[in-house]
Structure formats: structure tokens, C-alpha cells
Length: 410
Image (cartoon, rainbow, N blue to C red; front, side):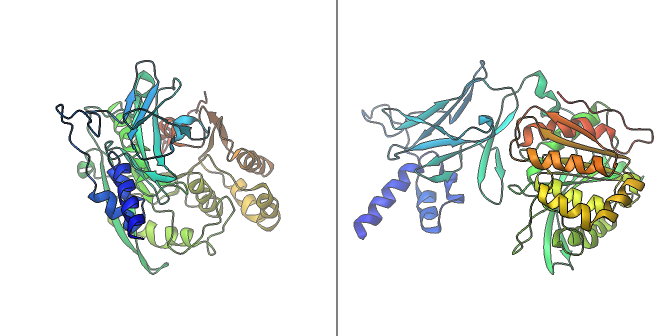
């Protein structure tokens, strides 16, 4: 048993040479081992150095290919996964003589992409890359491949809004809850009541995801600097509730859905009390990705008197649920048809195979009940790649006194 423990310790120290951040996802005993491990310093006088000097873990080439590297000399298999693979299975890295594993991708369309390594079945974070997407289920890094087409989300020398974490008490759930809030540049100098957008995340994300890998704060900063968007507050709540298993992609009427009840009875009143926001329908928008898109539909369809602007992204109800909904909740849908939203736009990635049937069935339901809406498809899979571009297009359409403009797909 002692010998096995020594071998395990040696193995995890080897795996942790580059990815010390793996400790975030390892079991406690292995986490301590990984945190204790240190990458050996390179010594040019040492004929057999343990680690190559100054090898970057990720390199973005001028040809739009990306090379991934991880030093794990004791590993048997290493793969890399992420939305840069466009839905393909994880890619296998090749081990070099020095114990460094590498993989070079085909040319990619410039954008921001996620990735993470798996070493002998253990998911690890690339601790040499400070950009990471913190999710409830795993840790992903992300990298930028910029060009002129990604300028809309670039970090620039422009006035920046403020992103702050808030803690509010949920009497509905009998617990404290966290959310993140984006405040526009010079918020402290704005004395009129501002519109508010509630932006909901997907099942694999949390309330900070929209301003990490999602980059919506940078998108808004750049839109403000260009004079293309009205001042607004963006509230990004936590869509997960401890101990509650969400019925994702299924309708859930408020009164039976803990998230919706917390949202309506605790979050919205807290926002109204804490920030200088308008609570009128024409000044209230809601948008959501995947699970958050279903939560968006649940809240907006059952409460059309609250929301004037509705933007479900990469989402939709299960077709079987829609059949039941059209019978049991017919009055709900008919009410929305009589009092339509000021603007409703649905979005999906053209290569999103995960929600294709749901999206199609949900759009058909809206058509059948004559609920006005627009639908666009953008290049990409089920990820932030099309969602970021969609939000950049619809931010300027929100809270306009005149009829909203058009949204173009590519």
C-alpha cells in the first residue's frame, strides 16, 4: 500500500509540472499533491533537464492554427477539448521525447475559444493561462485569436463599465444568492432611471461566465464608446439552485419553478431597491443561453406584462413538452399573442446539433399561436461564439422609443 501511494504521488507530481491548477478539479488527497508539486527550474548545465525551458502551453499562429502543449512525462494519454473543435471529439496530443505533449489544430476562424486538457482521464486547468471559464461542472481556459472580425469584443482604451458581485437574500429559497451586475461607464453620474437586462447563463456556466469567456462587458464598453447603445444595467443571476435538479429544456410555470420564484420575488425587488432602474415593461429585457434560454421563455411567456424584450439563445423546449404545453397552457400562449413583446428574437448556431429539434419545435409553437418573433442563425455550435455576436447585434435594439431595427444572420 505504501509503495502504491509513493507511485501515485510520483505520478501526480509529474502531471502537475505545468498544470498546477489541476488542483481545482482533483480529489482532495490528489489536490494536495498537485498543489505541493513545483515545476523544476531549467539548468543549462544539467545534461538531462526534467522540463524544457519557456515552452508556452498555447501558441496562436499567424496561419490561425493553434498549438497546445503540456509537460506530463509520466502520462499515458493526453487530450484537449473545447469549442474550438466545433463539436468534434477531443483531440489527442502526441508525446515528445522530452515528455511534452503537443497538438496543432487546423486553421480556425478568428474568435475566442475554450479548451481544457485531460491527462489520463483527469481534467486539468492550464494554470499558465490566466484566462479561464469557471463553471459548476469543470474548468476551461480560453484563448483569443483576434482579427478585425473580433474587434467588437476586444479590450480597448475606452471608458469601461463596472462589474460587481452582489449577494442578496432569497426569502423564497431561504438562502443567500449571488449575482453579477454590469454598470455602464459613468454610472455614478447618470441620474435618470435606467433600463435593465436580465442575462441568464447555460447549464454548464454560472453568473460570472458572461463577463469572463462571454466578454459581454467588453462588448458593451465598445458599443458605448461608439455611441450605439443606450445606457442600461445588466443583471446576471445564478441559474443553479443548490439541491434542485432543473428540468432543463422543459416548460416550468412560475409557482412550480424555484428559480423563477426567486427571480420574481427576490432578485428583481433587490435590483429595483439597490440600483437606479426603471421597472416598466418597455425598460425590462430578458435573454438567456441554453438552460438560461428556457428560463427566459418560462419567465417571459408566463409574465409578458413584465418583459418588453425577449431573446432566447441556443435553446427550445422538448417537442414532447410543447405538445403538452399547447394543451395545458393554451391560455398562456394566447395571452402573449394578444399582448406581444416589443421585440422577441430567437438565435441558434448554424452547426448547433444539440438543440436543433427543440429550436425548430419552439419556433413552430410561436408561429402556431401567432406570437410575433424573429429568428436568426449565426455560424457556430452550441457555445458563446454565436451568442456573443448575437448579443452585440441586439444590444443596440433594446429599449428604443422607435420600432427596433433588424437583426442579420450570416
